[in-house]
Amino acid sequence: MDLLADLTHAQRQRLAFIDFSLQYFGQISRQDLIAKFATGLAASTRDLACYRELAPKNMQLIHQTKRYHRCDKFAPLFDHDPEVILHGLANGFGDGLSHPVQPSDVCIDAVQLIHPDPNIIAGIMRAIQQQQAIEVTYVSVSSGLTTRELVPHTLVNNGQRWHVRCFDRKHQVFTDFVVTRITSVRLSSSEPFDHELPSQDLGWQKWVELVLIPHPSLTHPEAIELDYKMVDGKLIQHSRAALAGYLLRQWSVDCSVKHQIAKGVCQLALENLSVLDEIEHLTIVPGAKSR
Figure (cartoon, rainbow, N blue to C red):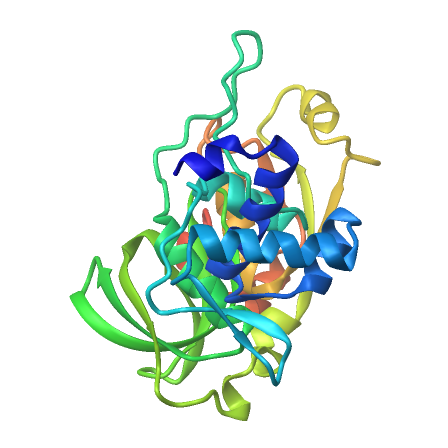
């Protein structure tokens, strides 16, 4: 790929954005390039022509939409690091030229043990962007390898791993699937029905208020108040009902009656326990089973 190596950094960045958009969104237009890089029409046309020269089987122009669409034989020109891409997408940023961040000797982040497959992420993202149903092969702890038809609408990081929020046609419910347990993704032959769209996902559309307090067993709760910048000894956190269970588990929030979890296990407690009736995934919430 000598031609790619000879390009300037700015040119590679624009080509990487084309590559990224095709891989994760399924399409790209000249206006997308203009909006992203503030280039002119002629420059964006040259960039797309250059990309086609480098990868003639990656995209085709659909004249009705005036957009270039991803071809079935697409092979990415750039390595898109999945962690960088996912965090970039979550924060509204992604230029395609993604490289793993060089680790610092003086600032150490948490160790990541789980790393999603970029091809799986890309397949799910394209389906989300184009509002399409997908057929996946999925390996679950209880059922092993199965084939499922899903209508995805959001990728979610629960603090430990990435999930896809979707409508599961097998059980006719909105639920979450662990992305790293999906081994293949392909488009379904059927379009999503109205009841499978995110507007009908009640757990996703509903917001709940979590009132977090220092665990009553602590001798010096003021330390926890400082950690979480509490006001009057409380931290008010708003969350989608579908995600609240993950938040409570991630931060080890004691949700048992009278906050009975042993001292030292939890530093936070949930004050408004009645909210548990409104959230999902209670089996993973610390102490929720004791209610």
